[in-house]
Image (tube, rainbow, N blue to C red; front, side, top):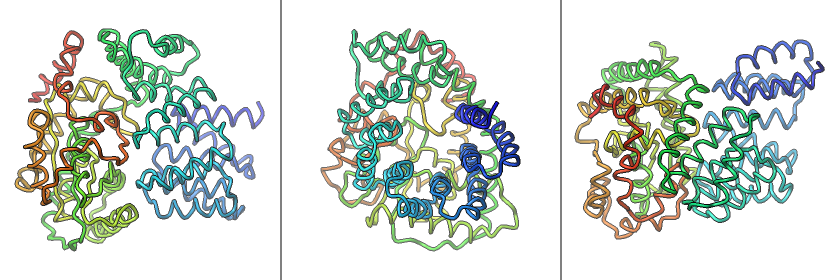
Length: 511
């Protein structure tokens, strides 16, 4: 087998998540072929896929010593910083690549994605269109531009580019899943038949079957065939559980670490300075209305909606896992605060900003320490309705507890336990917002929310569905519509199929 064949096999292994194998075999090949630049890029991207961003960056910096202006190395260093959410360094590397080669499509795509992530939608779209103008047959550009158009509510155009993606590669099933989520389907739609035919292909990888199953699960719910819908949703979740090998016990231990860390920090009497910006954290379990609440609050002309900022999770998960008692916590937290505010300032000059990453509920203690004047809105929902909504949706880049009834119930339990702990420490500083209460009494609850945020009342908050801000979550469609009550009893249609979930919640004593 020649080097090119070995390389292609390793690329496939990386794409299917066999990271340790790829790292071992690529390191071996680098010793044999130290001048093969593609091997360094493959190894770096595999480290990034594992979340080992610093290893990736160090590897490529060493490779750059032999090839100073290598655009692939520079691009992938930028990608490492981008995935670390160090947007400033990432932007610098991407711009350096484009100075060397203004038509380097990978970097144009990466920089467009970065600008989309920090809500610079004008610059993001300019770059996607530039990449399409250079070559409109690149799969990643078409798919990424379609996803961008979806986040800003231009659904007809998004559909066009998802379909262009599938014209380039009919087996790129992420585009199928996105198309399924884009609109409500009716019985007899030709697309349903095409998906049913596609999923029969025996050569599809499990990850492709997972995408198609989530797509069909959603579409069959649309057309009222709930048994079929549930069967596909279960297939998708079972596959994802197998692929991720998620172990809930790791989360249980991690939540204990969070509490232990907070106990250590609170007795240190740390002095973190106040900041000018007021940050409104909208948090809770996923699928509890956080996107809707951000749409409401950011409809106020004094508020900028920044969406789901992954910064707390990205930084503090690693920080706690590698925590050393000798570290200067005050210095570390101050540095994080400065980085967080620098990113916010790249997005907006507004003094009031929302951050609606739901799983920030894990970091309430740190939030109140770093941003003492932060507003905390805790979104809650009926446990069964919430858990079913989590189970039937596919979340990108996390939420790995969402693919198994027992995992969801166990995670719900540790979430409740941690929230009880935070409430004992910050009771009056946390506003509990019940999703059902918001849906049933929207005007009174919206007025309560705006008052709790310390904002003057504006009628625009009642017309939140006119808000044009980008929405990058699975709630992108619902949050652009007036409040409707259909979502309150979403489990009723599936009551004959979700006993495992009900039993898991009951045995975990979730109420």
